[in-house]
Each structure stands twice: as C-alpha cells, then as structure tokens.
Length: 338
Image 1 (cartoon, rainbow, N blue to C red):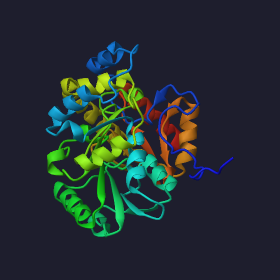
Image 2: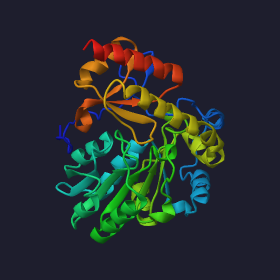
Image 3: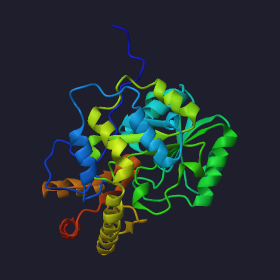
Image 4: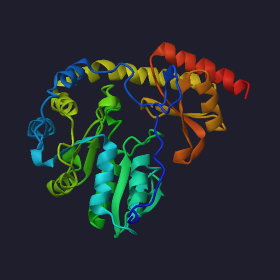
C-alpha cells in the first residue's frame, strides 16, 4: 500500500458533545434562543428527494444581492472548518509561512499542520508588523475565539493593507461578529476572505451553514477544490433564506449580550474574568481540565482552553439566566472546595 501524503494528526478540539452526557452545555458559542424558526422551516421544507443545483446559483445570488457583491464571489460550504481546509489547500505548500493573530481556531491550525506549513502566532498590537513578504495566509478571528478580543477598525484596515503589500491573503473569520456591533462589511476590506458561520447567531450549528465572500479569483480557487454537491439541500435552503431571517437576530442578540454581561459580572466574584461583549468569556480557575471534569460530573459541560495555550482558563458561553445561575453556583462550590 502507498504511504499517505499527510501525517496522521489528532482532531482539533471543539465544544459540544464528546460521548459524555451533560444536562447543560456551556461549551458551544451559539444563540441560546435558537433555532431561528424561519431558517428551521427552510431547512425542513427543502426537497431532499432530488439532487440540489450543483452550482447553488439561487443561494449564491441571494447572498450576493444581500452583501452587494457578485454571485461569483460567494462560496457556500458545510461548516467554516471545511472552507478553512480548502483555503489552506489552495494557497499553502510545505514550508510556507502562515500567521494567526492570537491562537488560531483549531481547524485552521490543523489545516496548516496537514499542509506542513510553518504557523506563527502573533499578538494584536504586532499583527500588521508581522506580515512580511513570504507569508501566504494571515488568519484573524474577529472577535477572537476564545478571548473575544478584536481589532479597532483602523487597526484592521492597517492589517489588511499590510497583507496586500506582502501579497498575503487575509482570512477574516466572522463566526461571532453578528453578536457585536460594527461587523466589518466586505466593501470595507474587499481583498480579504470573509468567512461566515451563521449557525452560531441563529442557533442552528447542527445544520453547519457557512459561506465565504472573497475576491473573484480567490472564490474560484475555493470552488475548484469543492466536490460535487458540496451542500445538502437543507443547508442550501437555509443559506438562501438567510437574508430574510435577520429579525430574529434583532430580537434575540441584545438579550444574549445582556445574559453574557450578567454572567461575567457574577463570575467576577468567583475568579478573574475576561469578557469583551461576545456571548462567551474566559474564567481563570487554575487547573481548567480538572475543573471542567468536575463540572461534567455534575452535568455541566464547559470548554477548557489548553488547546489555545490557556490551561488555566475555561471558556463559558452564556445560556438563559436560570442555567447561568446554576453554572455560577456549581462553579463557586467547586472552586471553594478545590
């Protein structure tokens, strides 16, 4: 048998089910009011008996009109993870340099490792200065997961300019941008790849909807690496309905922001909290893996951040107030007896 071309690597860690039962899941950064009823109807009413249009022209046109771009600039996918692997395959060869502003989302790091690229992590103040000729990709979670930090508009524009000067592609991961004001528009940064994961804000992460907006040449490179019928009919229908489904966000996201702020305030009496307005926050607890295990034994799933280089931090995503109150009480009891 021939040897595989890519080294065997462990899967990136994520929140969500891992084979151990939990009553309440605080590890997934999704809208606790989900799923969006309009998008759920679109998903369920899709025609699953026939193949979808392999070009997905209707959904690409709907998203293009909504964002003010051409349909050829829209790249749909099942999950942002799949798109991140595609963009690395399209632009990175063994030994190439790629950057991540702060610790990367696990799938980007894994895609870079599979490509045998050299991945360097840079800090927010140094991001633009670190982009030098020879860097192929620059990844930025905006806001960052798990810290919630983000660049100012001016700093983001400076980073985008540095990428253009170095002929590097800026990959702007906007998975959690809808939860915060001031989401960058494609028109503001038209040379970057804008990656959207609407399942987070709409409470439909299980459907895995995702898409990218990109310059036409970048979009063509990503389309080239997609298999036939890359989207199932239900996810395609969900994405096509997305522009009509924004009232749900206006109704629920201010509530989510309030719940997250209240949770951060309550947990500040338990330990050091880092929260920047996202639906999730960081809590310093010492041995985060141990604390996460103790919480799971009581039916609460949280995410320890060792894979981000933060072994003393838990990432906690706000749920509804009664659930959040239970989390605070169990954490207080656990840490007081630790």
